[in-house]
Length: 117
Image 1 (tube, one colour):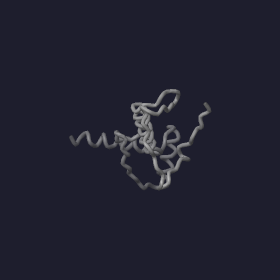
Image 2 (spheres, one colour):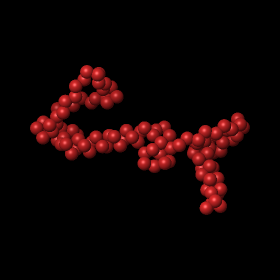
Image 3 (spheres, rainbow, N blue to C red):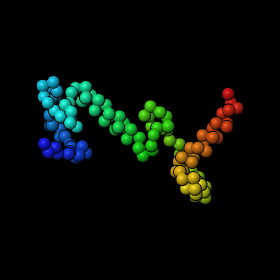
Image 4 (spheres, rainbow, N blue to C red):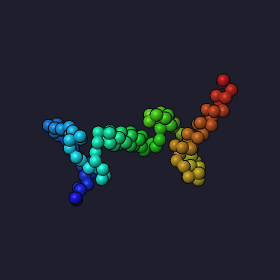
């Protein structure tokens, strides 16, 4: 059997599109060489949703807050010379200015809060 690959990004539904339920106990649908059951369909859907949720955090990468939440953003204005120096240091360390700044801020917060407790 020659299966046609469908690009999910190319699939669009109009307002009048009707999606019908399929009784997988009655209909035989093969996915990746195995019969699709309600349990497999649920597992596939959960996997797809997990991947979509993980991708919504891109381009910032993994959540620093955990649990798939977006990390808070802190913006800082600096002089051009400070920005250039940060870029040079970050390039030398093979990291982004954002990651370098996060490391510097984390170290500062840790040193300052140690005496507050």
